[in-house]
Length: 284
Image (cartoon, rainbow, N blue to C red; front, top):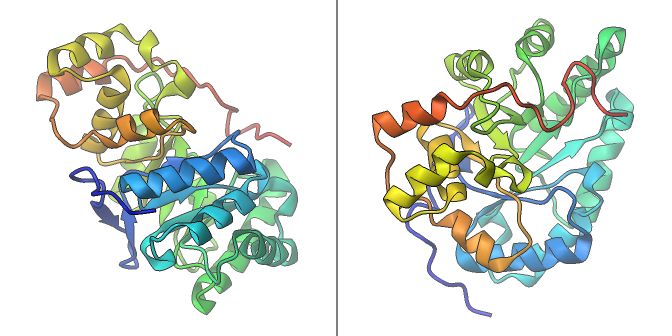
């Protein structure tokens, strides 16, 4: 299999606070089986993607590993992130969870290791212990960068109160109907890269009429407009698809630019519409 020329911009990346480069567009894999993920990631790497996101909870890390092994793209050229699940939190459990993820992925390191959700109330002490284990993984080179998912501002402050290393990434639900401006501002002020999951509203992005109108003006789909909006806001985006044509479509977001007026019109679509769980009430 040959590697095709990547769409212009797909190789662009942001620098995390420790200098690690993270591609601005990646392939999401939530609710995809191992076989689906393997095929999708092989396609994505051939198209030009160099970033993918998985999690122990997704049950598809082995599929990611098989795709990495099958692709002619070198492992060190692909940015791979995975996550520690809620039941795996705590110092010792996190060390074991990381070892298990590395085994399933078939790789000696993870580029970004994330806490999947903040634990609520008094249980947050386990999240602090999870972070301590992740700081050690960073120091030992098992993880090149560490971060969190679904942390609101008060979660970040609570973690930073005892952390030796601040989170480098906060991966949160983020799309035109849920923009979380206070949280994203807090992160960007502190050098925490914001990564958007569900940037296409879990396939419902065409339900936002303004994106359809703006897309028609540019000859683009609503999905491409939503991803372009996220990129121009400074976010990293990880749209999920297992279909090659959609993976290709989601990559083709660098050949146009939204005007200030168009960005403002999309900003005005914020409705606080959360499609996933409330971070203060994480799934079990």
